[in-house]
Structures are given as C-alpha cells and as structure tokens.
Image (cartoon, rainbow, N blue to C red):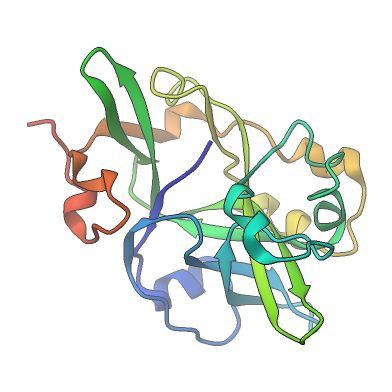
Length: 223
C-alpha cells in the first residue's frame, strides 16, 4: 500500500518536468498523509495538463457522504477496473500524483521500521492516480483522489509486499488521455517500476506521526 509520501520539489521545476500549464503554488511537504490535500496533474478541457489540489481518499460520486474516502486511499491495480468505487474513474478520470519519495514500514522483531523509497538520482516522479468529483444535495462539492498500488518490485519487496504504481514519463500522455477508455491498454501501463532505478533506506521514527513535517522525515539512519 501507500499511506505516506513526500513532495517538496519547487513548483517551477515541477511544472517544467511534468509539462504543466499555468502556475499553482504547492507547499513543500515531507510527510503527506491520507485525508490531506495533494497536488495532482490531469488533463483540462483544453487538452493541456493542469495542476489541481485534491483530497487524498477517493469519494465516489454516488457516496452519501465523504467519510468513505478515509478508507479509499489506495486502489489495487489488479482489480481497479472491476470495483464499483473505481471503475468509472479508471475509464475517464485518471491523474498523476507527483512525489519525491514514499514511505513503507518494515516489520521487525523490534517493531515497524520506517523506510523511504525514492529514485536513485533524486528526481521527482508520478504515481498513477484516479480522481473523482462528489456533490451532496446541498451543493457542497469535493474533488478527491486515490493512488493505485501493485505488488512490490525487488527494491521494495524486502520492506513491504506492495508499492504505488509509478508511471514512466513516456506513458503520461496515454494515462491522462480521457479518450483512452481501453481497459486492456490502461492495465498494461500498470507495470512494476524498474528496481534498479530506485533506492530505499531506513529513516527515523520521526516520520511515524503525520503531525511531523520537514526534512527530518527523510533523514537517513545510515552513516
């Protein structure tokens, strides 16, 4: 699963890297947790990529209230096209969720040990995500998102059995294209990211609390 991640790259660099139109300041975050707002990239009506702030925890359009989003932070890539909560969004409301790294907790005899997983060269990347628009009878609206997950690659597997789906930059257009509703071709994009391009290292338990923020969250325990 993915229950915590970081995104702190400068907004200007992010806009250039992901070819985003327009500017939307994004606060540097080192310990993003479910129910908080996250930066997401999606295609606008003009066909260009735009940045939006979405609440992490997808609320289906048919939900009676937003509480369901608290347990909809991840969607299994193996069944995302079948589940009522996700299948409509999978067909036409897909997004990229930028990150500089994510956290997983390894079970040990001493308890759960947090690790940070990132790209070896330190560059930001993007999770495969889905987004949804919800509105209640009083006109209250919410846009929310979910991160797709899959079985872990060789870099993450010793720490946790699952990991977020990370999309290669060359496949962003296919994923974001709202006209691409072909389930087979979309599923084919949800492959394990090459483990050789990633690194993992233990971090301090400072990151355990979602109330903690700042560079100390990504500080390595290794010498």
